Image 1 (cartoon, rainbow, N blue to C red):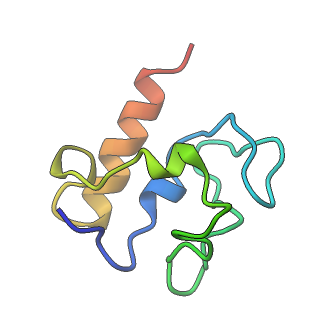
Image 2 (cartoon, rainbow, N blue to C red; image 1 turned 90 degrees about the horizontal axis):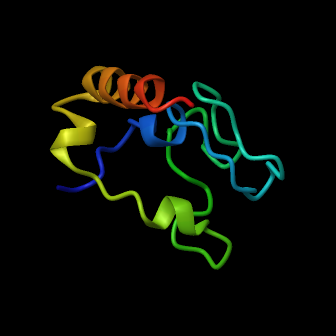
Image 3 (tube, helix red, strand yellow; image 1 turned 180 degrees about the vertical axis):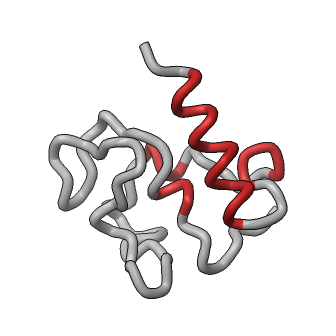
Length: 85
């Protein structure tokens, strides 16, 4: 599956505890990543040297992304909520 243009839910829905460029403390669930362009919803550092390993490990998959952005938000939010300590 190819990454869906204009989605960005993998950069919004999950919490990330690792430092990210521009976000040294990571990010909270539901918070836009600093590196996500709010107009295009594309990552500004995609495939650059400082693109985080955490992000490299996330591959688009129908199980996570669904058929549209709304489904991706529902799925990723559910997974985030169900894996909270």
